[in-house]
Length: 354
Image (cartoon, rainbow, N blue to C red; front, side, top):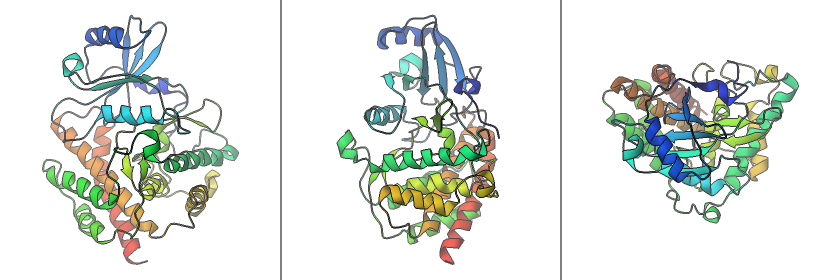
């Protein structure tokens, strides 16, 4: 896949309707300096939370809203996402500025957040093939540095000591995503997923560390500088919480195993041929930045990461079947669920036979 050279290229017609008149009235009252008239487009990504580009003659904003309709309890909490973005504003982790939040469903029918629009490049191709081969490793290094900077933060120092529970991250996450998977009867069951759900609680490493974790740290959830290998904004913090940094890093490094037609990944490709570091080198760079000697039980973290993403896609499948999925790619995500479940089980087998 080619990358978008600008976030503008990912905007199309509004698919999930909103009341533009009510929105403009609310923006005038709640966002400093706002002046209409307002034009609204919807980003093509954002299968989890509908995301819109708001354009006026003098400014551009981004609006993210909670989906309407029947959704799982605790999911799609855009106000929680706004909280972590506000907390990160003064750190080395680049994020967009929050202008206003709304929890009054009378305005648009669900909670929403208005934030800064940041121009730059979003890469949907983990091989970064739209930049010269000799520069691609620098983009990987920028991602590696950004996630290491995130995991260096002490949550209490940025007002997020209560952003999640400390300790027992894997127990809690495995339980949460297993419960959501098992509860969605409409989306159905999968033998590989069932096997991983049964195995994961028995294989948790004897390691406990609590940091702020992003939960979906991929190249396509970042905006890069228009011309430099530098991240100007990390997006999509809906799954962020207090958790284990190695789970977060393994989810990110899962790109080395991920088929590129599912989400941004290098699965089946030779990283060296792309001018990129191999997986072991990428892990070593993260370990140097975070002061680790290495990462034991790596395949457990990979298996857990594929399981969690499979559970998310299973939820998307449920929304597709219920008719309230907002993304143009939602059906593709739903169809990819069994492949992710299989990849989770393959990592499980590697862990068991190690």
